[in-house]
Length: 362
Image (cartoon, rainbow, N blue to C red):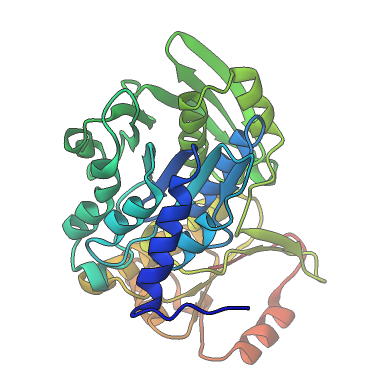
């Protein structure tokens, strides 16, 4: 064993990782955005792994420590790296790009998560745009951008890289329509690229998964995969990720989506709950780090919960803003429950759940 004494450990780790990355002739795909980074990373890596030896971040190793640690796992045989890049403050993604040197950048969307640190969506958008600005110029670099997001689409003017638009807009390079939820069996849709159209069913849950699929397909096309490879990979994917389903002893279906939440991901989860048959119970906690969007973010979730849920459970800090917005939107107070501790909430569920219920925990 040996030790290196350095002035700052994080800066030293980043310098070593940058040095190590330069030793490998690899293609790096960087991914950033407010919602959907991890699911996109997993599906992109899964598709590319059909042909290439591909490195990816483990878990959410997406910051100034996790990304260097990921790159230090590079070894002989790797040709691609798919790297999620998190954002908390201006300059952070630029630093990650200096270390990773991506040739492809994917931007998912711009929401309000981490607005307490960045102060506004404008600031969040500028921080995320550091990825496209860091890309090499065409023909080496490619920015894969969300045509449907008003904050992301203009990033096409901020880079000299090729632009590849995806979305539900038929003017995008890659777009989808006829999207139909199949419940827990996934989604069915048509996907269009140039003069080709494919009808697909993919085992990813919820209509919002189409955006993840489009991003992954775009990256696969940019990296040269064939449609036969892409379709096989989509239809055999195991990248459902954080949302886990389970049956309770009463026969209810539990949708466990317990992870850091934003208004955007909350609304997507409630939309999924809406798509499934049965009595709908939404157990929602508060959302942190929304800054100036805290009130309006919780209100939007409360209004949607009032439209979707038969029973609404507000759990712990900030969730009272969701329940109040739901009641203000017409949700019956008799169907509302609030809990500050897990034990009475579990006891309530044990006494309430019955066969056929669908429970979202978010």
